[in-house]
Length: 341
Ligand code: TXA
Ligand code: MG
Image (cartoon, rainbow, N blue to C red; front, side, top):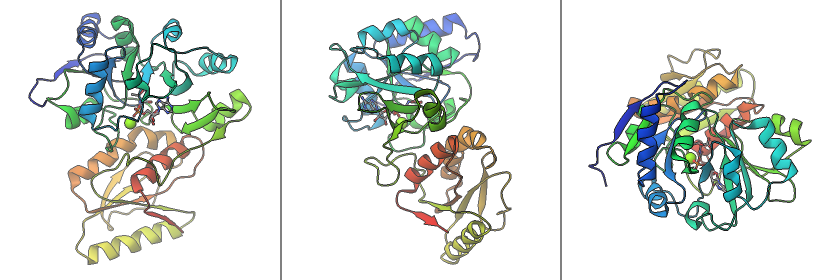
């Protein structure tokens, strides 16, 4: 349904204008789709109880119907209608990490629409740590079902401009609250399994979760995931390992590609080697500070689409803290193209 006018509503991150929020909430309540900033990435929201609006999220994203959505809430009182019961463990996690980038999977209450859960008996819930998101949900007065606001398979949006690249003319409105902070999605933690199990690493680290729960299980899809994800247009090749061998490998691969007439893109870090002679370099943060890499990662991946390179070479990070999350996204973007040196 391209052709509608997407209304772009600019708001301040802190103390967002009440009228602007009220307008966006009205769009949601009338069954429209509103993209909004969270602390992780922009979400594409619909009033969760409006099954027609939720169905449109799947349609515009091109998202498989069996991939369930996260329910976004602004207050814990909204949980009563969404989940069957709240365990002590869930309470503890909410006390420690909400509002924040932790999504918790709990048994779904009877009223939760199948279209949101993909027909599962569980539901994903999270309270985002962003004044604009919280104000929007609060003003709408209902839980907001929202996936990341990108076409299925593309890198998630961390700026309003990314959302418009994918959805201009196909959604009713976008609240532009500036760039998001964390830059990668929330951690998804399943509390319906025998032991708490991380299904997707994200903004809350495994170390933080273990510290709170005394350990967590991990069941993370990296390479051969069910759905292609986070991928820029050009194939991405992830080179990991340690020491100078990594940089030599990247240079060697770049040379081979260039000999075949290909335009080479290199994703690298401010504190890494100088690759400027090897290809089109895009910098993202410092590898010594994975938070800075997470914050700019998706923007950098989208930048390669503009540069129209034929292949992207990326140096891996240490899989610690949020570096684990960054590596998970890079592995998914790489598909099977992983080189260990
Ligand atoms: O940071 C985020 O989580 C962002 C912002 C907008 O909140 N949202 C986001 O949504 O990343 P999405 O739809 O792109 O990813 C949600 C993930 C998917 O991997 C989905 O399969 C999983 O959560 N999920 C949702 N409900 C689930 C359930 N009941 N059981 C298992 N996984 C579930
Ligand atoms: Mg997503």
